[in-house]
Length: 595
Image 1 (cartoon, rainbow, N blue to C red):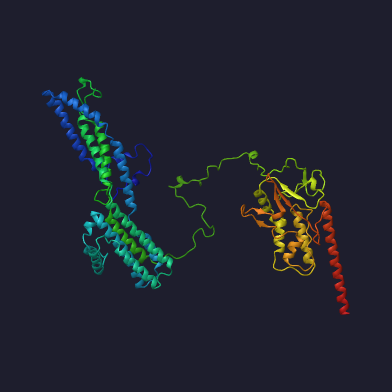
Image 2: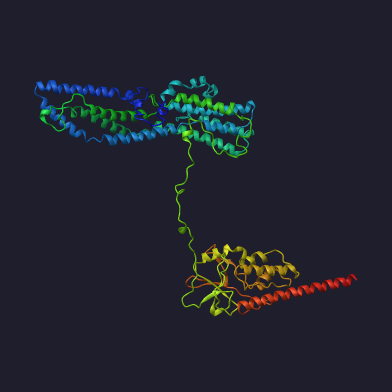
């Protein structure tokens, strides 16, 4: 099992807090792992040093030894030990952690099975326990194929029967399948588990197909993890890379046995001005590189018997215990439902602290711009659209005046103002012109949906039925049209609705003065509004909207804006007077009949 020491170094306060880890001679320590190699290296180094200082000095072979030592020292530095070894260790560590993440944990499946397979009787309990037993059996069979620890514990299928993970009948079926198939059948118990799940659904213990699918998906996920473990056991790091790293490290230190010898200072060789007997820094370099290589050798197969390898036997026991506990002892059991302490407050403002944890109280984190202030002068919103006349066009002024007026109140801020050219001030077809794109106009019209003329048409007259009698309904409709047109900036636009018995289509064609093509959506510029033959656009992108006014007989009206307003007001008053007169006559006739 991996040696855990995080509780000893919970913080790095103080001087040399991690030093106490350097003097631990326990399982997993680097001293216990590499001590044979440094000992052997020091003995061989001492042997060569004795030969140089005693034997070769006496028999005149010291000069040759010195030349060989200088040669080995020069070429040993050309071996890229750091690069090759560092890259190899990086690959091994990534592979080691990936193998740990491939270990199947049946906890999630046990929770799903306990929640989805209902029934407190022996039948339901038997199904839940059997499913989890099959899952743990698959995991154990997989481990016996890849790790010596599990294989030594369960060398045969009979040992699995004795341990309670398998029955005698299941062993016979598994042996028969293994005789027929040349491939491993570690997944066979998962097939049995799937059959039990299907039977539970057929018996109604699983209430819907979604729960059935969830269980099957989790079983398939566990099978994939077990298959991944077998793949890691089958596909190793390429042997050639392991050989290159091993040769690089050992050849480097074999060269240093001669190249790092302390030579006679009288010869004044480079880096040999002081005579030492013990190679301190060479030993440290050997310790680092050899320790790095030993770490890689240990982690290349974490399912072995090293100190840092995974404790698979403990994992087998833990999984079977937790699985049965969840699906049996904890099945459909939970504490009594009670109101929590913060029932009235909805949620706690802050959970209490102890005296020991008070120092860790912190304010909630804020965004990086929490204290960033923008000057008020820079908070003003810039205008989006500007109005300007075209080059060569006549002067423009608001529609409410037929002659160039003095400064008048600005129109409502919601809607763009309707402008009237001087050349058309006396005509009955005023023109709206606005600088900007068609999208800008569409957004402006949509922002004034309530008071828009086109929206008024759509809301008022697209109804399944229309009143047949002329009375308060028609008058109210006329007044609503007047208010809608006045509120949208079209003060001079009021629509006279015919008082005879007409349907919606005749009202649309005669009262509005609009054809069926007045409202349509341009497919090329959707969702922008296109106003049919009543809207046009000049070369610069300015939009022209022409609104035609007609009287009750359908004749187009002409004149200034003020004249049109007076005309429509007079018609409205005349219509109201006629309605009142007709009502008085009806009451007089009704009184005569009663008398």
